[in-house]
Image 1: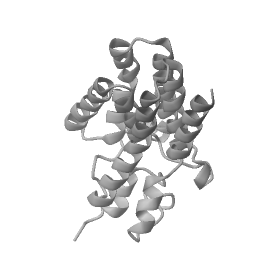
Image 2: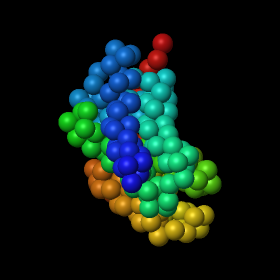
Image 3: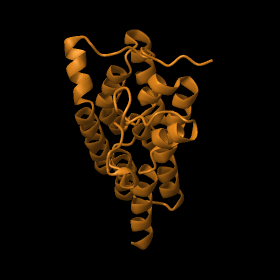
Image 4: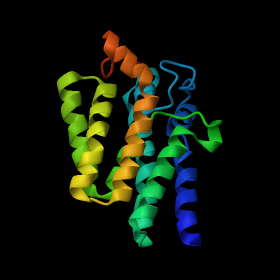
Length: 201
């Protein structure tokens, strides 16, 4: 019981570490919460800081989901604890205790959770994202479609009710956090990947 609590609580704390804010501070860039889309995520960091800063942010946000899941596997966690651990890391990113509970939209952290749960799940979701991004060149639409399909992918690879429920919850919250992007997509005003990107010298 203590180990299970530590896994879940530790996952939330790790998820609460905002890669975007830390990267921007270390690289002397503006606070991502006050520039661009005001979202502390890799896509907004790409706009205000360029590809290098965005790549580091993306890696950091993914690791926040990956490490707690791999740790839970190491301790032989049940599907329920795996689900709670993944959800805790995801919620930490969305509502970080270290940054006033104002976090990002959760795509990279969710992908990290999926890879940590099962490489096949993360790989399948990642491939869907890459394919859609290649076709439409819009990050938010790629994320929405891949995460909409994610519960089916989890069910196909690891059909445990707890894990499918975790993914449904994550996908639902991710859609909620992308509601402004959805409105822009409907209006046809959503930015393409790299649009407005800061030039790097």
